[in-house]
Length: 416
Picture 1 (tube, rainbow, N blue to C red):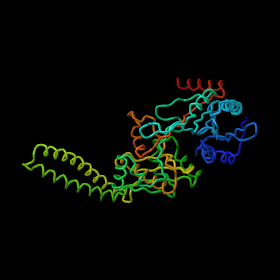
Picture 2 (picture 1 turned 60 degrees about the horizontal axis):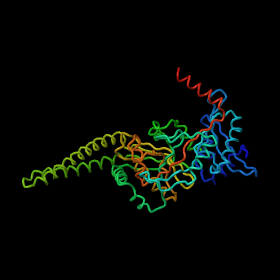
Picture 3 (picture 1 turned 120 degrees about the vertical axis):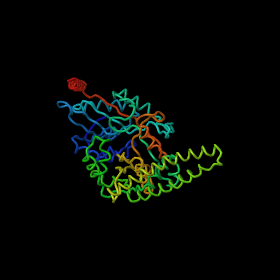
Picture 4 (picture 1 turned 30 degrees about the horizontal axis):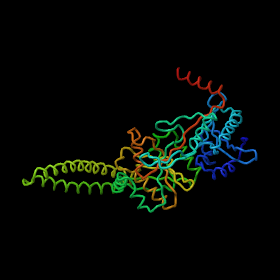
């Protein structure tokens, strides 16, 4: 076995047929990252018959003296099920990359371990996962562990809505709360559109607090991937918001007045009166909500007569599926559920266009326990999603001496 440099087109041809392929293992991603302080190279793994049996995009940057840290996004494309080949691979990685001054390599292969339902119950699993895990560990890779929430590089848990069915069937299988929020958003005047110009200035304002990447990264991503990228927005039609808020307020006011009048009936028995009082109190709360909505919508109409963007997303189309790269919404108007309608519109669009599924991106692997990301899970799993659990991250040290120096240097910096 040998590790050699290969051309981007060779890599693309190999990657496009590999079962663990991902849009992160593409020349487009290499081009993107080359614009953000990363050096890139494409490596091929050649067997004794001079046949390409593995390949990877490698990103690396200098971090200490002349030493570098490298990352293979979504892992080296390789058959990890063969114990002797994994050991041979590691030996050659140490020889080849180690000579380049790379002291550590991180991988996070796109290898699924389990498929689960929205409650976390396993519905399918990879019967080779234990073997793959054992092979990586025995070859010298250090498993970074199953972190409580998110990995350092790419999410280990992802929610997926399966498409390819009648859209009415897809909708009716959503969680009841999700269907309600979609309808509520639509009835409030939220509208969804695909931005053909792929202008992300407004979207970046919605996502900048959840990403460590500059706006230039996303603009470059769009440029590198071209037609494979879609940009969606949810916009509140402020005129419709006012009309619907007024209509809801007036309708509830009429119901409230009738209940108030009925309560005055001296012939009501105590049970009926108590039921009416409870309904009246619920109506009072709704009335207050609708009144506030009417005030807010009126102010928004004055300020934004042409409407206001309150949610958005960037979507990658790859391998007959659509993947949400990042999405965000204006938390001040979260009660309008614009992000729910946004996902529903994407599901409808990609289903019409024959895609297999919409990947809603990261969730956390705690399904029944309350945690600070429970809301994130609820907002995605309610779309009748299944969850794919991937293998996670592994590091391998290629130069122990350099890596220990680097660790001590960083420790001394922190101490001071």
